[in-house]
Structure formats: structure tokens, C-alpha cells
Image 1 (spheres, each protein chain N blue to C red):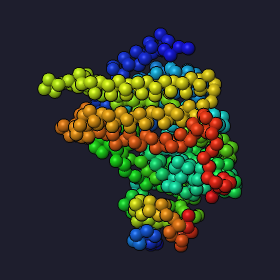
Image 2: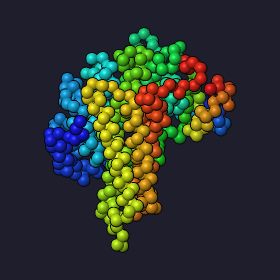
Image 3: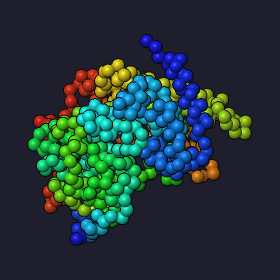
Image 4: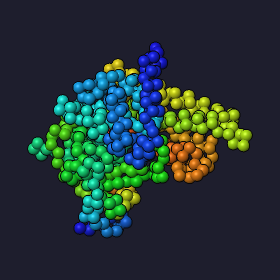
Length: 417
Length: 70
């Protein structure tokens, strides 16, 4: 068993770091920060001229969609290589991976036509998805969703609403989960659709969050200032927008969500502040006092570093399972518990180290490191909720990892509504 | 058409809540979040004055039997 990287992989990491040092100029950072809301930026939202050129350079080096098949615009590479590239770019707030559950789900369950239509454009950034799963009354208990898709000839007609469709204002499509059968147990009557945003009857209503106002520096927070709710009023789509088989969407959606929980970007967002606080402690002195000499701070930072290494190893294990053709379920869930809760512990510890200054946001003359720790504190708790709450993830570990029975309500499973 | 928010009792203009005020980057219509919101409940749209009203409704839908309960 070897926990290290090969010399070739280490060389690739250096190459990526050198590329970033050479190409990520102050002008590009300024343009990136104007295009997004402090969150990591992908090519689909990075439409400024400098950012477009940067992504062209990244594409020339074969660093987009590395682990996807060449026939669909990828590089036929392995996930570890993709992880290394993603990790380095994620550190500076640029998403080069296919973050999101749409692309892996299409690759696994899509028709040949869907794979050819979507995956190359998702890799190039021409297409992007807003995740249309959560509803006002169906979040952690996602299978209770009420958005309906009714077959009408060669079409489906969709009515309902979705919450926290965060990218709906920039995306080209909604990756939508809707109920197609109300007469069966709730997990069995669900299907997935790939719905173009410009379909008549689709309406986006902005929701403004606590995060990133004022804007945090690029890539330093968990989420964006704006999210959305999305309404579907008699939205008519052809049956070719159905992903996988009708009523089998729960399995397709769960698989995609699992894969989306694993990867450099999601792991890194929970440990990046560890790296930042170590750098801050090493480089600051105050009237003869050095935080680096403070035993309490040294102990806490060492403890956080150990936890961060656990995050990274869990991510690497999940990727290794997938790379070797296996399927993971509880492993990804365990990671989705550990990393966000570590992020919360880190944020709280940093707040104690920095005192009141650590709570000042970007723009304050007294903010520490442009307020990244304060912005992080506001967002850290969100990470334990989105893309599967830590409570739901614990249930998955108990059932699938430890073989415990379902924590189902007494009586038979509910039928879909 | 005017609806009445079942929680606070204020009038909500259904048309205003649906009126296009802008467009997303890829062509979906956008609406003004200050004009109320709605929820698909029991097979029909129910209109609310604010998200706060809707949250209160969702916490206890059985308290509004005229809307079909939970």
C-alpha cells in the first residue's frame, strides 16, 4: 500500500502550480471576482475575455475533464490525475473539474445521444446545470418531493417548484428531479430530466443569502451571495430530456450525488482555512508577541492539521474505490460528515485565535486577510447541510456501512404524493 | 387576480408575483422577489406575502385546513 504520489504525478502538480503562478495575473483575478460572487468560478460563468483565454490555455494542456472518455471530450485520464489538477486550481478559486452530479449521471445513465450532446459541452463550459432537487418541504427527505412530470404523448409536462437552485441564473439547464408516479412508494416514482433554462414556463426568483456581501476574496467561501427558487408552470419538454428510465431517477440521482461529494473541490473547501491560518500564524508578530510561539495556538493548529489529513485521506480512498471500478456509498457519506464538521471546528478555533478582528468582513480596514476567516465562519455551517445533511449522511453510514436497520417511521413506507 | 396570504392576511397580486422583470443568462424569466412568493401545495399554487410567511405555513400546514391540510 502506497499513500504517496508517483514522480509523474508530483511533476504534474509542479507544472500546474507553475502555470497558475505565470497565468493568474492580478487583472484576471479582478475579472474573476467581477464575474462571480466570491465563490469558486467555473468556465461557464467565467465569460470575461481574460478568463476565457485562461480557460483556453488550461484546455490546451488537457486539464479539463481529465477522467472522462475522449469520445465525449475528455482525456481518458485517471481520477488521481484529475484530483491533482483540481486541487491546485481549487486553491485559487477556479473550478476545472465537473463539479456537480449531472455529468457523472449522464455518463452512467444517459443515452448515447445525451452523452454526445451534453458531456463535451459540460467539459468545455458551454453547458452547466443548476441542481433542481430540493423543494421547500423536501430537502433532507428528498424523496418526498412534489414537483410533478406527467407524460403527454411524446412530451412531459412539469409543474412544481425547486429551492436553492443556486446556479439557475447562470446555468443553461436544470438537472431536475420530479415525480412521475404517485401510486408507488415515494422512492420508486421519481425521474430525472435535463431541462433547458429557456423552456417556456420556467421562472427564476432570486434569494439572497448571508454570504459574500461584501464579497469575500475569490474562492474563499462555501457559497454564493445569490441562490434561487425556480418555478415550473406547465413546462413542456420532449421525452428525450428524460435521463435514464422513467421512475428510476432515485438511483440515478443518488449515484450522481455520491460522486459529486467526492473530489478535490469539496474536500478543499473544508481545509483551506487550516492552510491560511498556519501561514498567518507563521508570518505575524504583535509588539513582540508571536502567535507561533503560543503553546495553545500551536496545539490547536496541530490538532486541526491532523483532522485535515483525515479529510484528504478519506477523499483519496473514495476516489480510489471508483478508479478501481468499485462503488462506494457509505464511504462518501462518511467523508461528507467529517469534512464539513472539521470546517466548522476550524472556523471556531480560528475565531478564538484572532478574537474580534477575526469577525470583520472584507472591506473593513481591520479585517484579517481581507476577511476570509469571517466569511468562512458564516459559511462553514452551510456545508454541513447542502448536498446531503450530516444527519442524513450519518444514517447512510449506519445502514450501509454498519448494517443497521432503516430508521424508518413506524408502519409502511409512504406512497408518493 | 388578488390572493390573500393565508398566514398574514395581506393581499398578494398573483400576476405581479409572476410578472417577468428580467431574464437569466440563458433565457429563463426572472421575477421580482419583493412581489411575494408561492408554493405548490395539494395540487395548486398558494401565494404568500413573504418567504417568512411561507416558512410559517410549511411548519404547520395543518393549521390552514382551507388549503387542504398537510
